[in-house]
Image 1 (cartoon, rainbow, N blue to C red):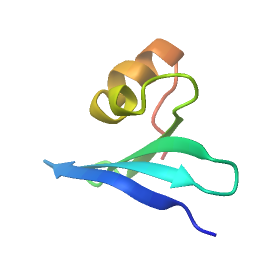
Image 2: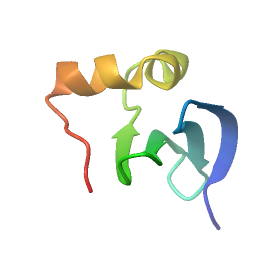
Image 3: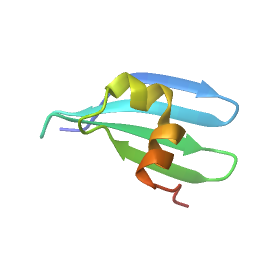
Image 4: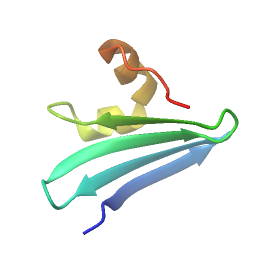
Length: 69
């Protein structure tokens, strides 16, 4: 089974999706920056899914995660 998109937003070249994986019941937020051609995937883990969805760059900064080309 593929991941299912639970929420999506798009603005100014950024696309943010909240995805659920039914195989392991996990959540992740994926950010695609179409301008730079980079992607960021953040497992939600113990954090609030909506917090990660609405503030992925703040969460990534807190975790020390960088965008990947």
